[in-house]
Length: 298
Image (cartoon, rainbow, N blue to C red; front, side, top):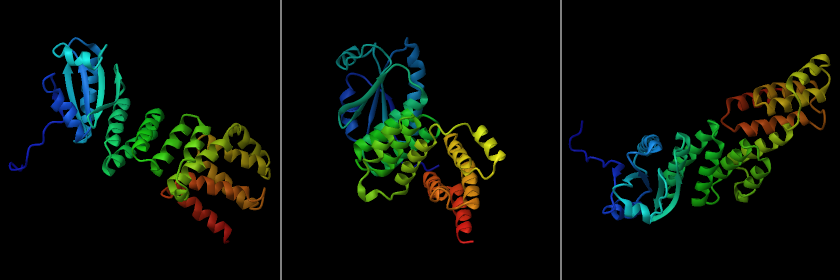
């Protein structure tokens, strides 16, 4: 243990009316400050408080938390128009920028903290917020992810990763039209960005797979007549709609093997769209591209 290393101040502290200016207003000039108005008798506060502290601690010095007991600090609570607790306010640059009332789920609290970090500016904060939003999206918290991506865009308009992420979040929420509108906001110079291409491809596939039918019925139709190319193509669309991209790739590769020119090369076109949707780092996409190439040049 290095006894000479400076001791880092805790990101969490109890505040008072006397210290509010220094702890919140002045401190928020350096980094975001969250103010938690609570009271010992408040049941929801006992759940929210520890969750807030955990999220702030995990932010590793990028945000601070000031806890204020409303019973002991009624004047500042009145000035902030706190009518019920728990009440949470966020300050950036000396101004309140966000907040909520009542208990929140851990995922919502994390999204709240990540938005504040993004608002505070700086590439490190933006990158962390992007990573957090992607994690939310993977975990199914699409609404929280959309809020975080939006906060990033408010700080850095034209951020392609955030635009693509926001489009995918709306897609996960079932709003295909809004997702396509978001993608259109990307700067023309970034049109070939892999993240943007992936989002566009996912939107196209979602539209294509809408109402594609049941995979079981279509698979049965293909088994009854292996030369029914339309049924095989529809099966691939249904597989995409069911989230079975690997199955769709197999189905389309088999269709390409049987008749590569069918329907103006529809199998190859859809394969490339699936590969784009998976992104350049996807092993499944790389494997599929190699197999398609081997068929093309055989």
